[in-house]
Amino acid sequence: MLPASLSSLHSTNVRTSPYLSPLSSSSSLPSPSPSLSLAPSFSHLHHRRLVSFNTVRGNNPLATKAERRGLSVTCASTCEPLKVMISGAPASGKGTQCELIVQKFGLVHISTGDLLRAEVSAGSEIGNKAKEFMNAGQLVPDEIVTAMVTARLSHEDAKTKGWLLDGYPRSFAQAQSLENLKIRPDVYVVLDVPDEILIDRCVGRRLDPETGKIYHLTNFPPETEEIKARLVTRPDDTEEKVKSRLEIYKQNAKAILSTYSNITKKIDGNRPKEMVFADIESLLSQAKREKMKKTTAVKPVHERKSRSNQVSSSQDNWKGIPTRLNNIPHSREIRNYFYDDVLQATQRAVNDGRTRLKVEINIPELNPEMDVYRIGTLMELVRVIALSFADDGKRVKVCVQGSMGEGALAGMPLQLAGTRKILEFMDWGDYGAKGTFVEIGSIGANEVDEQDDMFILVAPQNAVGNCIIDDMKAMTDAAGTRPVILINPRLKDLPGSSGIMQTMGRDKRLEYAASFENCYFFRLLYYAGTQYPIMGALRMTYPNGYELYKRVDVPSGGEKYVILSTFTEKPSSDDINDAFLGKPRNREKKASGFW
Ligand code: AP5
Image (cartoon, rainbow, N blue to C red; front, side):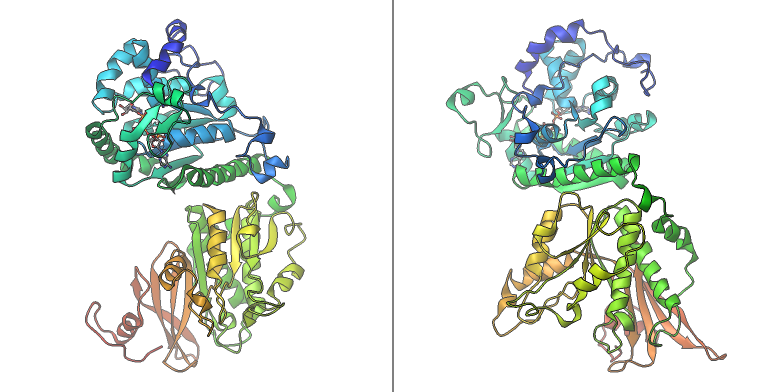
């Protein structure tokens, strides 16, 4: 954030640049209306926060592994540059993160707060108008701010390098102004910080008028006495004004979010700034890769008709649950039915930005508790999912846990023994997907590479005396906001005599396991203690609720599944029993013995 005194350094430029002149003839933006004529030219302002951050990429400690190795994916002129909005309550750390983002991604930083403070300090017409609103902790009128932003966005550097919009839009009307001009970001980052922390951050914030660097009296104290002596406080950083700014932020946040809901990424901003940045970095790197892939699509995979397109077109044609599910081996039709069902739900969840997902499917061939369990069916399912995302240009890492004990197979759940080898040797199609878009790995933080877009974890599970959750946690932490999909996880405790399962604490383990949401659930229901005949099925596909079906015999000799009830949350066994018995919901009840 820029202290008022700094903008005097630029005041000559502010005054001499003609208003609205930056709109070039090639601009895709329509000319601003006359009512926006207050907008200044401020090409001189946007490097302010960069003063002390010019680094040589090769030595840049923030450069990714891949970049340091020279493997960085950089957008050539053919690739449209990245467009990012960052939002969050006052003092959520937008300015702090913007410094790091600009340093790493080279975007043009446009901060409405900085622009306005510069105008105030220059004593310009805009500044004089804006001052009273800012000092009162209120929003400056839309037409002033919108004109500033649209003019700045039309500059050539923003068009070629991409932009990082900080503090705009701040109201629904501002968001709509951008929508009307067809200005839309690739990612809308929201920093999430609890209120009480925000107030402390504002009150303790200090700014260096010489470098523009943001400090905090306790969190980020100045490096030297000399810097300390020249620090200034923002006039709107009193507790009372922060509370008013916070209130205004909350009133507007929801409406703005509705405009960007499909590209919104919420980030926990109440962590050390390096950790916050790590998440943002991974998010923006991914967005950048997606853009790259769109312009430089790799032919062999992309020339194929995308499986996800195929399935989404068939999404509305769901024909109900297939019959003869107790016939083993399952027919190809039945297997394909379930692969597609899982795939559609998973695709929808990932497309909606969900990142911690699990698929639980317990048809007999996929139920390790039944002796008809077939590892091949699990592998086929994994392959279908991985290839479908690869078809969409994503780099998918398929991971199987390795041995968790001493020796080759010690601590390896029986169900998974040999799985990795099978995956390695499987037929991944003639399109070169494996090795380019699909990689096989194990579970752990070391497996998370910069280029990976998402991770599929094959049946991660605890073994007696060994807990997989630590490795999974490390891996998901490293994956950041990239999707991690668990296929048939079994994360219940299996304590051994060594007590090794006590790692992390039971509550923490359960909490971690619960942090994955079901994007697909299918379970056959049997009468308690039996595995024949099938009583019914419970099915859930993202984003829908749980559907409870009853299997009924039909007079012609066949069978069918009829829907009995639906639930927004996963029903308990009591709920299921009651639905089968035709009892009303929400009463006190006891389990009556089904499944
Ligand atoms: P603006 O300057 O945008 O203010 P703001 O949104 O209230 O945000 P801040 O600058 O206060 O905080 P920040 O999120 O950048 O946090 P920072 O990184 O500095 O706008 C000011 C005014 O201009 C508005 O009130 C309004 O009047 C007007 N205005 C602006 N845009 C407008 C628009 N579109 N429409 C209408 N009016 C508009 O960090 C804060 C402190 O926390 C620092 O001390 C920092 O060191 C510390 N900190 C940062 N990160 C961390 C961390 N991870 N852990 C601990 N401390 C941290």
